[in-house]
Length: 223
Image (cartoon, rainbow, N blue to C red):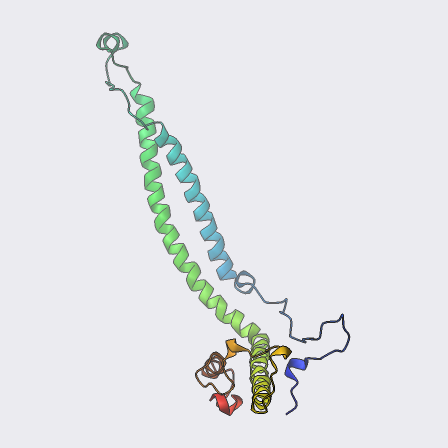
């Protein structure tokens, strides 16, 4: 059997790499979701604005809440400074503190509304991502199939090379040749060449299930 997996070339030059792979490169023109769907871009931008607004409100809330942190001395509203001094307690300006409390309360209300809006916006963006992904998949389907078939073809060539190598080493063993000094190149990660339950066989059957190849494309030893 003549083995030529993925145009692998064996060179005799001592300093050159003996393996040359002509594997396909990743396409550079894969579209983004926001470029293919204005609706997705709008949903994404809206979500970003809501997140920025929530961050701003949280910062304002934390700054106001810090004013009320820690143990506070007792205060009495509506008493004069003289009475407060006689009782040994601080007087307080109810106008400023009440305004701060109302502002804090309003921020909490606003945060609650923004959180609900964020949930709705996240749901909308997920929906728009699904819709945009359908369009993107349609656009990149030919490139995906080309690359997928290259991977599948390499896997099948690996199986064929493994089968040939295994048969060759079995012949060496039968003839009593001690060949360990030559090194070993068994691709154990792929399973044996006749292992129908091995990783390589499972991979190819999965590709068949996904409609990328037909059953007849799978080597009969792995079906």
